[in-house]
Image (cartoon, rainbow, N blue to C red; front, side):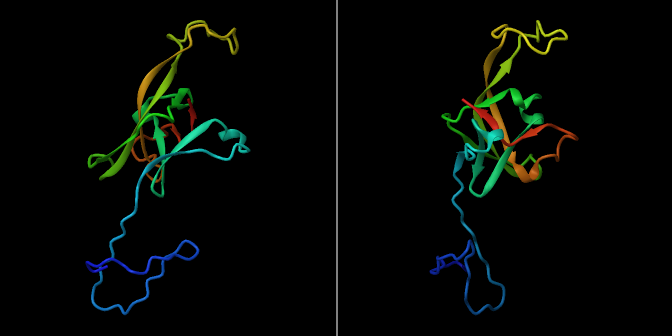
Length: 156
């Protein structure tokens, strides 16, 4: 604070109370560790079983169709792959995007699904490696009207 580290570093109930005599214009710089982590939900949350999300520091990230293509339910996130964080000035006035590796299920031009809801498995289903891009969840929906978005993706 004002060029000096804060000696008081204990928090209570999620808050750090700064006690000091304030005068003039003080500057407080908050330096948070911002590691990129894959997170998972409690397995009892059935809708999220086997899925992963991305967190960077305190921020949750999401995947939008405008970056990753349509049908996000066909995308699988590789939880063992390395991620990269990239600051993009051109993206919504400046934001940090996360890049991760994953796979997209392909149906070979959707052959064989004509008016059929079910069929015997392994007919043209394949997956191809893809580079996925995630943005902070609080920024979704600012580039494409009614664009598809997902926070949780299937995990490999």
